[in-house]
Image 1 (cartoon, chains in turn yellow, green):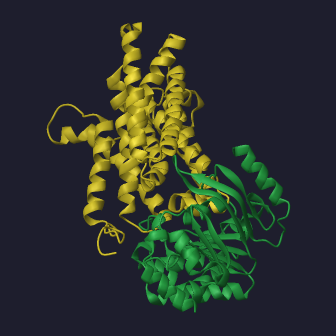
Image 2: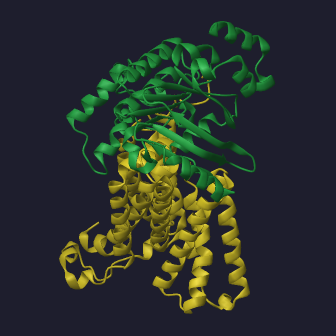
Image 3: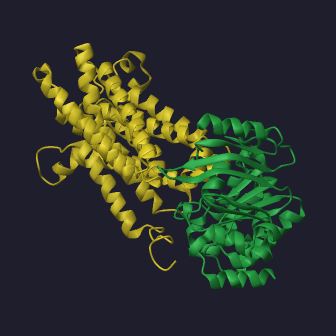
Length: 309
Length: 267
């Protein structure tokens, strides 16, 4: 494919998909190790009431109120989950289950009880995203990458997700040491002065922000998959957290690029007429990578697995 | 009631000097309705090896965790070398129960020991050769030097416990608090750990150990703190580790035969 075709039609969706995948996979490494990986699933449900409330307050379905509403709901949800977990002294998964079903139900009720039914709050869009539609029509080829006029026409999702990825990366880089120590041994972390409660909250809020930015661009399927699949597959490639992070980034990129390409061309290669959903294919690829890692990864057997003590 | 307890704590706290490694006053901790630790006072002697003993569920680990600020007490005060805990964190090292962490965590033995240097390294400080050699020295002291590059999940229980001890050694603290370091470890590890703890004592450090094996108390320790939710006895082994105090702490849970055995051992 030539630059004239690739840059306007495929470059931006590829970049957006890749950035979203990495932004979710990075905090996902810690969430998986903390057994909180389902937080992506939880957040994908709780954004519904946030979006409805944002619409009720502003009366528009423009992007920023929706994003802020979703982010607000996500932050409320993670704070509630932590509160339920710590005050109720129950397992994280149970706390998530309680909070996200309740908030999702509240969103459904809100949607029903207000006259939002006349507005097109598209569920399908929220679920699968519209990665293929994030094209850059102002571009004419690779030269447009340096052309300020053409750059002004970039889909706004791209700078948003790029900024989010930058924020997530800085968070992980800056708090690497306390994140690692408190994920491994929370009690010890507290004795050396790490404020583990605050740090744990910061981690889930970072994950929530990444999730909302990624929903906006690519939909919830990718988000849920990227929080879990690349980190879980990466864990089976190595026994070092540093290397695991690197593998998770590689797997995130691999899923995004191969999923996008296969969604666009795979059906054509097979003789079918239409392309399939890129978001769906990216999530599927991440699942396949996880399956391969589980079958052939060098560190898939766990020394700490149930067995003789 | 809370304010009263706090007030009592404050009035006693004035007498606590900088020499006292750990002083606890009026400490009450509760996880639910029933307190796990109730109104406990404890004064750890400098340079001593103190065993915290008591029956299962007596609040031994909770007492330690509250002293370290890992769990929040309902009331009471903790002072470390005469100051609030937060100001003296650098002088404390902690060895948690081995079972409290996930040994599947993707990290190597040496990385765990380096965690003991994190206060020194700060957020972004690089691990340099001198940090590495200090961590290796600590591994050497617990006989685990050859395991530095192993993934921690590949270690036996006793080896894991030694790695935790090496991490505490890397903290180079004045007060060492250990939670059941001898639980489920092999005899060689138990010997290695007690040798390290005795060398710490000889170097003038203070060691406090949550301990469950009554048979070894007289061999390993010079001070005893006996607890069953409330404090039962505190003092030197001769003062606090007697048939009477044990009967009082363990009640019917300690077989009379065991008491007799211990009494004989004590002469």
